[in-house]
Length: 256
View 1: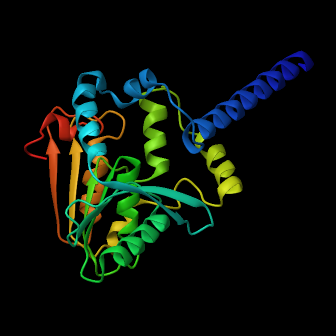
View 2: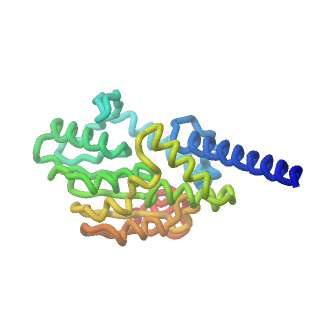
View 3: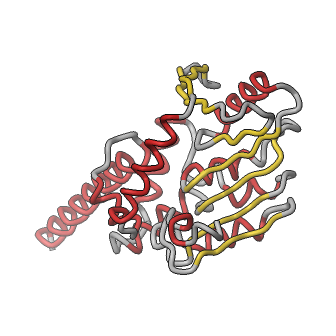
């Protein structure tokens, strides 16, 4: 009996160590900035991005030939943020891209100061940026923000990580996700379910366009359907058949 108990204790200790190591790995891969390998990014997204690279390079080269300037502002928590401002025809219309939701408000303020009170601003985000602009909709946006475009948003970090653990790693979310949640609260002050796109859009007041690829394996299309259902403001959606994660523009450029 003593030997059995020792063996059981050793197995439990090993299992606990494995869970802790797995949770630490999950935390590092999802919450800390790092340079992901292209092959891994393509595998996780489920999209063969190689075939779109020539188009991307061509359009990026054209874009960078347009008049633009570096812009620096201070974040809500005192960090130095960098942006690139493309002035276009310098009218009163602008689009602001991916960001943190509170920092996004700082960029909106910068744009209003730049363009004046008659500015008409759209917020646009893809994937994590899309979840961000959804969460911005729950804030008191200035009247210059006229609408939001959300492309392949996830409902919450907790739900998208649960999906990834199940679909890509084939392991249960419990207790790994709970440990990662605890670590995140200690490190940055919020949990994986504290901020939710699906909840924040219940307070939305500006019109929304929701876009998602029907074949998205990384952030499943049902997440946008859930956000769309909860959205309190005028809304429409474009679900692109055959498109994976972030691929809707390339699969159906005309429709997009």
